Amino acid sequence: MIGCNASKQALATEYYCGQKRVLEIGCSVGNVSAAFRAFPEVAFTGMDIDKDAIALAKRRFRKYPNFNFSLSSLEELSLRGETFDYVLFAGMLHHVDDNTGLQLLRDVVKCIAERRSTSDLRTRSG
Image (cartoon, rainbow, N blue to C red; front, top):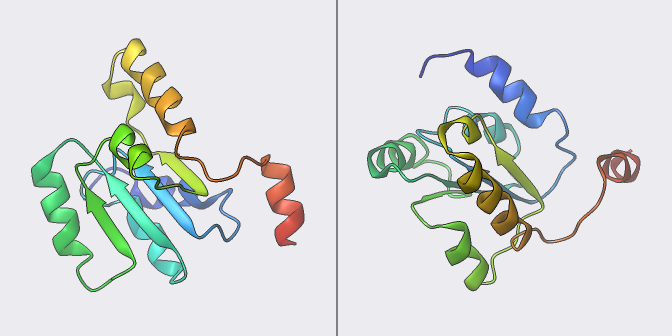
């Protein structure tokens, strides 16, 4: 609950343009996730490998039925056919080695619903 959360939240939403399904990889206790409470239309999924952090995130967001926190892997999400419109790696890639980071980036591509450039999204959303 420390560490420039307002700045991290602002950065996480800088390119957000109304996408409905948001995935945050490495969400921890939901500090960055909290920025998306301002968007009630969002179906938000946060994932992390720390079961205690996920448990705390679930408690913090229990009043927000559109928020889901999970220990699932990207591979599991992909196999279930879950897709997302907006994906965040919010300050977590520096916690893994290069090979793991590259694999995470490869795996997340399988969960992206539709690929558009940021400029397309900004133009479309007005």
